[in-house]
Image 1: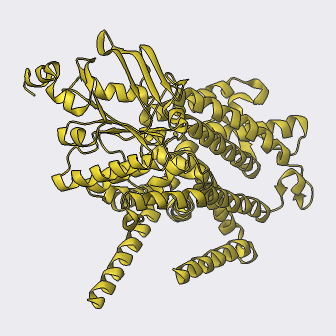
Image 2 (image 1 turned 60 degrees about the horizontal axis):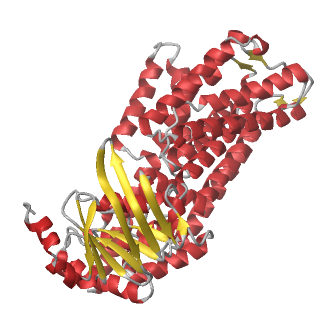
Length: 336
Length: 236
């Protein structure tokens, strides 16, 4: 037991060290892929709190991403408020929206596919609403003005080169994983899982299932919105489709599902495996065989789903459990 | 401890429970029996907050509890088990029990300690790290009681806790319930197995077609003509 704990501690330290030193020896393109991996890992961790732990599969999380991206960008471009503060305004708005969506759905007992459908509808409604809001650029979206100073403007979340963005999203991801692993070891985390596993039984054992589901929805929404602000700052352009649309909604949850639903590391592992596959296959195959990269990406995804129904982390844990029971059986046969 | 007055439940014109009144005194084991469809499980669901009564009143510790949600009823000290066992399949036995223990012990270390105590009581300590999905039926029934016990109830509602068990296993559960009762927990039990009811109950309530047709000691009930008619007059 002790060696395993020490081993995983060393592994974690090595990964963190590698992650923090990457920009010193990698080129811009690799750092860009790193940013994408971390961004999607972060978003999947946020989604996982509601979708994985509590088992309420939201298919419209882009709603919160869009609220975060649009709020901070609007405040920045129209009022000059730094995104470092604007992201929290977006977070608060998304938290309110998360409460509203959660209350509306869970108060009336919506579950499974019905909950998923409502979340799709909400996000899709947001696309059309924002499309028609001229104050935030309508369908043309908003551009994040580059302040254009030498060396960027770190106080406005603008950096010269990709390294600065890399560190911002790295810290966000580390904090989100820490929060997620902290939550799951406390009463709140256990109660969320009990709701996923058997809601009636949880309620009978004194779990306020409505309350914990709404709380999970709020936390997940706030985290997702903060990620939305980062997205806007990094890509410097947002429009209703690319932040509120079904694209980001689906991408976010894919990484969590492929990596391992409801596990602490699943969302991170999912992004770590899939994002490079998507990016590298596009750059290698995109030019010569148009569309081949999507085929490859799809194939990898189907294979993972077929052979790892519980995701990559789920498979790893199953193998470890089997090895453990085999070694304890060996111990017994030796003793007898 | 529990006072039920004129309780009634209608489902779309069908009356499942009709004008039901009874009391459960502290320290008792009260049996609730009746043929299939008599309204036993509906009554349980109303007591525990899973169904709202159409009319009537449920008082627990002199507090009106109809309309409260199950988790609120649980916090007041009334816990239930389910006829069909309801484990959390992907949580360990210990974690299953901790969910109940968290009601009185918000801190995880305390909840874990309490859950281990309970697992000792229901004889599942050796299974603490086993997943809920990997238990036998007897173990699941014990876990079902353990989870409810972990909420530290004053009144425990057992819904057919012996159903599907072998004879020796039933005895096993009987011993456990009697011990817990001696330690001060009051029981209301729904059961099909007469052996369980006759062995355990201080008092028995008989339902038929949603109405109470008799109440008394097990001996009185077994001689009551109305009860015999309800059971023997039909295919049961």
